[in-house]
Image 1 (spheres, rainbow, N blue to C red):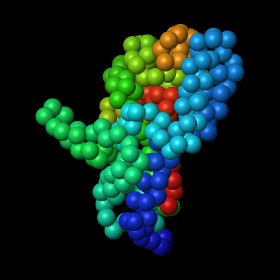
Image 2: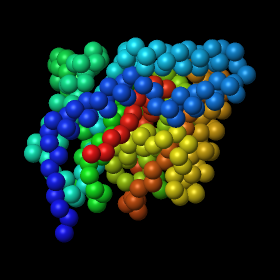
Image 3: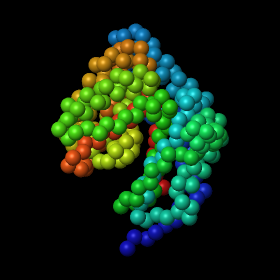
Image 4: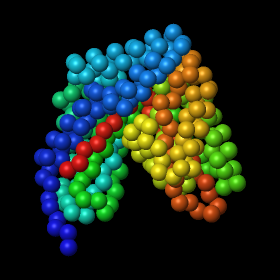
Length: 282
Protein backbone atom coordinates (compact mmCIF):
# COMPACT_ATOMS: atom_id res chain seq x y z
CA UNK A 1 0.00 0.00 0.00
CA UNK A 2 1.37 3.41 -1.04
CA UNK A 3 1.90 5.87 1.79
CA UNK A 4 0.30 9.23 1.15
CA UNK A 5 2.21 12.44 1.86
CA UNK A 6 0.85 15.96 1.95
CA UNK A 7 2.78 18.66 0.08
CA UNK A 8 2.16 21.95 1.85
CA UNK A 9 0.56 24.85 0.01
CA UNK A 10 3.47 27.24 0.56
CA UNK A 11 5.96 24.88 -1.09
CA UNK A 12 3.77 24.36 -4.15
CA UNK A 13 3.07 28.07 -4.60
CA UNK A 14 6.70 29.11 -4.10
CA UNK A 15 8.21 26.45 -6.37
CA UNK A 16 5.62 27.03 -9.11
CA UNK A 17 6.13 30.79 -8.90
CA UNK A 18 9.89 30.29 -9.31
CA UNK A 19 9.25 28.06 -12.32
CA UNK A 20 7.09 30.74 -13.96
CA UNK A 21 9.68 33.46 -13.37
CA UNK A 22 12.58 31.35 -14.64
CA UNK A 23 10.59 30.38 -17.75
CA UNK A 24 9.63 34.02 -18.37
CA UNK A 25 13.22 35.28 -18.14
CA UNK A 26 15.31 32.43 -19.58
CA UNK A 27 14.97 30.63 -22.89
CA UNK A 28 15.51 26.86 -22.41
CA UNK A 29 18.94 25.58 -23.45
CA UNK A 30 17.49 23.36 -26.20
CA UNK A 31 15.87 26.41 -27.80
CA UNK A 32 19.05 28.49 -27.51
CA UNK A 33 21.13 25.69 -29.04
CA UNK A 34 18.67 25.19 -31.90
CA UNK A 35 18.67 28.90 -32.75
CA UNK A 36 22.47 28.99 -32.62
CA UNK A 37 22.62 26.01 -34.97
CA UNK A 38 20.19 27.69 -37.36
CA UNK A 39 22.25 30.90 -37.25
CA UNK A 40 25.43 29.01 -38.05
CA UNK A 41 23.84 27.09 -40.92
CA UNK A 42 21.92 29.96 -42.54
CA UNK A 43 23.25 31.57 -45.72
CA UNK A 44 20.61 34.31 -45.63
CA UNK A 45 22.11 37.55 -44.25
CA UNK A 46 18.76 38.95 -43.06
CA UNK A 47 17.86 35.67 -41.40
CA UNK A 48 21.23 35.48 -39.63
CA UNK A 49 20.79 39.03 -38.38
CA UNK A 50 17.32 38.31 -36.98
CA UNK A 51 18.44 35.09 -35.31
CA UNK A 52 21.28 37.01 -33.71
CA UNK A 53 18.79 39.58 -32.38
CA UNK A 54 16.77 36.75 -30.80
CA UNK A 55 19.92 35.41 -29.12
CA UNK A 56 20.92 38.87 -27.87
CA UNK A 57 17.42 39.45 -26.51
CA UNK A 58 17.57 36.13 -24.64
CA UNK A 59 20.97 37.00 -23.21
CA UNK A 60 19.78 40.39 -21.95
CA UNK A 61 16.52 39.00 -20.52
CA UNK A 62 18.38 36.37 -18.51
CA UNK A 63 21.01 38.80 -17.24
CA UNK A 64 18.60 41.59 -16.29
CA UNK A 65 15.70 39.34 -15.17
CA UNK A 66 13.41 40.90 -17.74
CA UNK A 67 10.53 39.35 -19.69
CA UNK A 68 11.68 37.64 -22.89
CA UNK A 69 8.66 39.17 -24.64
CA UNK A 70 6.30 42.01 -23.73
CA UNK A 71 3.41 39.59 -24.27
CA UNK A 72 3.92 37.53 -21.13
CA UNK A 73 1.16 35.19 -22.23
CA UNK A 74 -1.63 33.04 -20.92
CA UNK A 75 -0.30 30.98 -18.01
CA UNK A 76 -0.87 27.36 -19.04
CA UNK A 77 -0.17 24.82 -16.31
CA UNK A 78 -0.19 21.05 -16.69
CA UNK A 79 -0.26 19.20 -13.36
CA UNK A 80 0.33 15.46 -13.02
CA UNK A 81 -0.75 14.18 -9.62
CA UNK A 82 0.77 10.94 -8.39
CA UNK A 83 -0.95 8.33 -6.26
CA UNK A 84 1.20 9.13 -3.23
CA UNK A 85 0.47 12.85 -2.81
CA UNK A 86 -2.30 15.05 -1.50
CA UNK A 87 -2.77 18.79 -1.11
CA UNK A 88 -4.77 20.60 1.54
CA UNK A 89 -6.00 23.20 -0.96
CA UNK A 90 -7.37 22.38 -4.44
CA UNK A 91 -4.55 22.41 -6.99
CA UNK A 92 -6.24 24.89 -9.31
CA UNK A 93 -6.36 27.44 -6.48
CA UNK A 94 -2.68 26.88 -5.71
CA UNK A 95 -1.76 27.36 -9.38
CA UNK A 96 -3.63 30.66 -9.56
CA UNK A 97 -1.88 31.87 -6.39
CA UNK A 98 1.49 30.93 -7.89
CA UNK A 99 0.70 32.81 -11.11
CA UNK A 100 -0.41 35.88 -9.16
CA UNK A 101 2.76 35.80 -7.05
CA UNK A 102 5.06 35.41 -10.07
CA UNK A 103 3.42 38.07 -12.21
CA UNK A 104 3.40 40.57 -9.34
CA UNK A 105 6.99 39.99 -8.21
CA UNK A 106 8.38 39.73 -11.72
CA UNK A 107 6.57 42.83 -13.03
CA UNK A 108 5.13 40.69 -15.82
CA UNK A 109 2.35 42.19 -17.92
CA UNK A 110 -1.12 40.91 -16.92
CA UNK A 111 -3.17 39.97 -19.98
CA UNK A 112 -6.25 38.11 -18.74
CA UNK A 113 -9.77 39.60 -19.07
CA UNK A 114 -12.37 38.24 -16.64
CA UNK A 115 -15.21 38.22 -19.20
CA UNK A 116 -14.64 37.70 -22.94
CA UNK A 117 -16.98 40.46 -24.20
CA UNK A 118 -17.67 42.85 -21.32
CA UNK A 119 -14.85 42.22 -18.92
CA UNK A 120 -11.85 44.01 -17.45
CA UNK A 121 -8.24 43.03 -16.91
CA UNK A 122 -7.90 41.02 -13.69
CA UNK A 123 -4.42 42.59 -13.32
CA UNK A 124 -3.14 39.28 -11.92
CA UNK A 125 -2.97 37.20 -15.12
CA UNK A 126 -5.48 34.81 -13.58
CA UNK A 127 -7.38 32.61 -13.85
CA UNK A 128 -4.71 30.48 -15.44
CA UNK A 129 -5.39 27.70 -17.95
CA UNK A 130 -4.96 24.59 -15.81
CA UNK A 131 -5.02 20.91 -16.77
CA UNK A 132 -4.92 18.35 -13.94
CA UNK A 133 -4.24 14.68 -14.60
CA UNK A 134 -4.16 11.91 -12.01
CA UNK A 135 -1.50 9.35 -12.92
CA UNK A 136 0.25 6.28 -11.51
CA UNK A 137 3.48 8.26 -11.19
CA UNK A 138 4.77 9.25 -7.77
CA UNK A 139 4.98 12.84 -6.68
CA UNK A 140 3.66 15.98 -8.28
CA UNK A 141 4.86 17.22 -11.67
CA UNK A 142 4.02 20.79 -12.67
CA UNK A 143 4.72 22.08 -16.18
CA UNK A 144 4.37 25.70 -17.25
CA UNK A 145 3.84 27.12 -20.71
CA UNK A 146 3.41 30.83 -21.47
CA UNK A 147 1.22 31.19 -24.55
CA UNK A 148 1.32 34.60 -26.20
CA UNK A 149 -1.70 35.99 -28.04
CA UNK A 150 -0.09 35.75 -31.47
CA UNK A 151 0.63 32.05 -31.20
CA UNK A 152 -2.63 31.22 -29.42
CA UNK A 153 -4.56 32.89 -32.25
CA UNK A 154 -2.88 30.43 -34.62
CA UNK A 155 -4.36 27.36 -32.91
CA UNK A 156 -6.40 25.11 -35.18
CA UNK A 157 -8.94 22.32 -34.87
CA UNK A 158 -9.83 20.25 -37.90
CA UNK A 159 -12.43 17.50 -37.90
CA UNK A 160 -11.29 15.39 -40.84
CA UNK A 161 -12.70 12.26 -42.39
CA UNK A 162 -10.73 9.11 -41.52
CA UNK A 163 -10.24 8.59 -45.25
CA UNK A 164 -8.28 11.88 -45.42
CA UNK A 165 -5.36 10.10 -43.73
CA UNK A 166 -1.99 11.71 -43.29
CA UNK A 167 -2.24 13.58 -46.60
CA UNK A 168 -5.28 15.45 -45.25
CA UNK A 169 -3.45 16.13 -42.00
CA UNK A 170 -0.47 17.47 -43.93
CA UNK A 171 -2.64 19.80 -46.03
CA UNK A 172 -4.42 21.15 -42.94
CA UNK A 173 -1.22 21.79 -40.97
CA UNK A 174 0.54 23.50 -43.87
CA UNK A 175 -2.50 25.61 -44.67
CA UNK A 176 -2.69 26.81 -41.04
CA UNK A 177 1.03 27.55 -40.84
CA UNK A 178 1.02 29.47 -44.12
CA UNK A 179 -1.96 31.57 -43.02
CA UNK A 180 -1.09 32.17 -39.37
CA UNK A 181 2.61 31.33 -39.05
CA UNK A 182 4.01 34.77 -39.94
CA UNK A 183 2.08 36.27 -36.99
CA UNK A 184 3.61 33.78 -34.50
CA UNK A 185 7.11 35.27 -34.47
CA UNK A 186 8.93 32.36 -36.19
CA UNK A 187 10.91 30.19 -35.85
CA UNK A 188 8.02 28.30 -34.31
CA UNK A 189 7.42 25.00 -32.56
CA UNK A 190 4.37 23.08 -33.79
CA UNK A 191 2.42 20.69 -31.56
CA UNK A 192 0.02 18.30 -33.28
CA UNK A 193 -2.46 15.80 -31.86
CA UNK A 194 -4.15 13.28 -34.13
CA UNK A 195 -7.25 11.46 -32.93
CA UNK A 196 -9.23 11.70 -29.73
CA UNK A 197 -12.14 14.09 -29.35
CA UNK A 198 -12.09 17.73 -30.41
CA UNK A 199 -11.26 19.01 -26.92
CA UNK A 200 -8.70 16.27 -26.23
CA UNK A 201 -6.92 16.89 -29.53
CA UNK A 202 -6.46 20.59 -28.85
CA UNK A 203 -5.27 20.08 -25.27
CA UNK A 204 -2.84 17.33 -26.30
CA UNK A 205 -1.43 19.45 -29.11
CA UNK A 206 -0.67 22.20 -26.60
CA UNK A 207 0.87 19.77 -24.14
CA UNK A 208 3.08 18.45 -26.96
CA UNK A 209 4.85 21.83 -26.97
CA UNK A 210 6.48 20.90 -23.65
CA UNK A 211 8.60 18.23 -25.31
CA UNK A 212 12.31 19.01 -25.65
CA UNK A 213 13.50 19.96 -29.14
CA UNK A 214 14.82 16.97 -31.03
CA UNK A 215 12.95 14.43 -28.89
CA UNK A 216 11.04 12.28 -31.34
CA UNK A 217 7.82 10.39 -30.87
CA UNK A 218 8.52 6.90 -29.53
CA UNK A 219 6.69 5.36 -32.51
CA UNK A 220 8.98 5.34 -35.56
CA UNK A 221 6.06 6.01 -37.90
CA UNK A 222 5.12 9.25 -36.15
CA UNK A 223 8.76 10.19 -35.58
CA UNK A 224 9.26 10.13 -39.35
CA UNK A 225 6.09 12.17 -39.91
CA UNK A 226 7.33 14.82 -37.46
CA UNK A 227 10.50 15.28 -39.50
CA UNK A 228 8.56 15.27 -42.76
CA UNK A 229 6.27 18.05 -41.55
CA UNK A 230 9.17 20.06 -40.15
CA UNK A 231 10.88 19.91 -43.55
CA UNK A 232 7.70 20.92 -45.39
CA UNK A 233 7.10 23.87 -43.05
CA UNK A 234 10.67 25.09 -43.51
CA UNK A 235 10.17 24.88 -47.27
CA UNK A 236 7.32 27.41 -47.10
CA UNK A 237 9.87 30.24 -47.05
CA UNK A 238 8.09 32.09 -44.22
CA UNK A 239 11.36 32.43 -42.34
CA UNK A 240 12.37 34.20 -39.14
CA UNK A 241 9.74 36.74 -38.05
CA UNK A 242 7.88 35.99 -41.30
CA UNK A 243 10.44 37.94 -43.32
CA UNK A 244 11.57 35.08 -45.55
CA UNK A 245 14.11 32.31 -45.32
CA UNK A 246 14.41 28.63 -44.53
CA UNK A 247 14.16 28.77 -40.73
CA UNK A 248 10.44 28.67 -40.02
CA UNK A 249 10.04 25.71 -37.64
CA UNK A 250 12.42 24.64 -34.88
CA UNK A 251 10.55 21.38 -34.46
CA UNK A 252 7.26 19.53 -34.91
CA UNK A 253 5.78 17.15 -32.34
CA UNK A 254 2.98 14.67 -32.94
CA UNK A 255 0.83 12.97 -30.31
CA UNK A 256 -1.36 10.06 -31.46
CA UNK A 257 -4.64 9.44 -29.62
CA UNK A 258 -7.28 6.68 -29.83
CA UNK A 259 -10.31 7.78 -31.88
CA UNK A 260 -13.85 6.88 -32.85
CA UNK A 261 -14.07 4.83 -36.06
CA UNK A 262 -15.93 7.67 -37.83
CA UNK A 263 -13.77 10.63 -36.73
CA UNK A 264 -10.29 12.01 -37.26
CA UNK A 265 -9.71 15.03 -35.03
CA UNK A 266 -6.60 17.14 -35.65
CA UNK A 267 -5.48 19.68 -33.07
CA UNK A 268 -2.64 22.10 -33.85
CA UNK A 269 -0.94 24.44 -31.39
CA UNK A 270 1.95 26.75 -32.22
CA UNK A 271 4.60 28.24 -29.95
CA UNK A 272 6.67 31.27 -30.92
CA UNK A 273 10.48 31.38 -30.77
CA UNK A 274 10.14 32.78 -27.24
CA UNK A 275 9.41 29.28 -26.00
CA UNK A 276 8.77 29.93 -22.33
CA UNK A 277 8.26 26.51 -20.80
CA UNK A 278 9.59 24.32 -18.03
CA UNK A 279 8.75 21.67 -15.44
CA UNK A 280 9.36 20.87 -11.78
CA UNK A 281 8.74 17.76 -9.69
CA UNK A 282 7.83 17.75 -6.01
